[in-house]
Image (cartoon, rainbow, N blue to C red):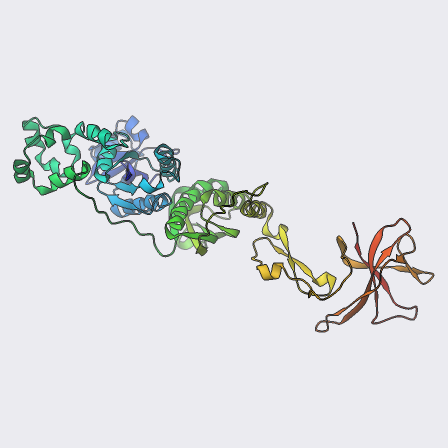
Length: 491
């Protein structure tokens, strides 16, 4: 089943300048010196659509007046469309600030049309815009329902009934003939369909009939889908200067929504992103502050990225006010399919564990969350190093081990960071009590490139039957015999 969602952004021109009305003191957008859109505060003061600039200033002397900027409106629509690509790759731009989405193949994935519409509304609201949403089996039908704010019509029968009740002047080709339609009593699309088609075509042109037929599903519809760019970089101009890093999260979330749509459309997952905090320009210009997030496991969802940025911004102290944000995907890779295991692992998957480690690294600092990296070295203290959890460790390095033909003694559970020199009593090493050798020696000779080491390792047992891992040095023996060291403890 083919199903379309149409989004009409009626307040887009004003919201390009002020996505949030929390600090609104009266904002107005003018087109040809007349009010195009006014904020709620300005409307409460008496500002109305079509009012001239002088009337606005008389009612609101401190009003923020903006000239309509079609380029900014187009950028804003492009940002909304980019975020919606996470639901379907088939997104097109319609007339009069409208976006069209073919979601027929996405319904089961997102839990049905109701759940999908809720998610789309939430995303548009998170981006800072309001929208009239409608869905229908045809793109033109959904467009007309969205322009009239007439709700959803999932089945064709319901769409026909709703369309018949809509006003004729919702169709752009019909507006030049508004007086003629009013004179003949043709007010709805149902009335328009009952008129003779040859005469209607001679009077109003073929464009009106084509739009009508497309809305009612009588002719096929063709659209040019929005194509995502090759690389991702999005920017957001803030409405005011911000001195608190925690307040930047809402703006960063808008950019992450666009990143999610771009990743889904390109079938990619991101491994490293950077958020640039832009400061003042001009004579007091400062370089942007960079907030970089490195992921141990690639992701294409924004929820985890929002949590990581929240932790990073919470630990950040701003040296200057922020006036803009820019998000860039520095490192991406092809999206891996999700794990389709019939019996999922208890306690979460490997991806869930990596998400937890990434969150800890963002909260505590990457230098405080480490992972072991085994090394193929015979020396015990060199056989393992600790590296940040974000560092990629190959499977070959992770499985590094001694050659399989080498027979060695069991290794202790706890290896000391630095060996402890042991006392000698009666020619026996002493650690709380005399130690008795409980195994044959294991000789380790390595490190010829950075200082050769020759050691004989033993499993030693104390009087309390505690097992120790000790060794004696064979190079540099003193007059009193070889030196003994404690290197590990068995559990």
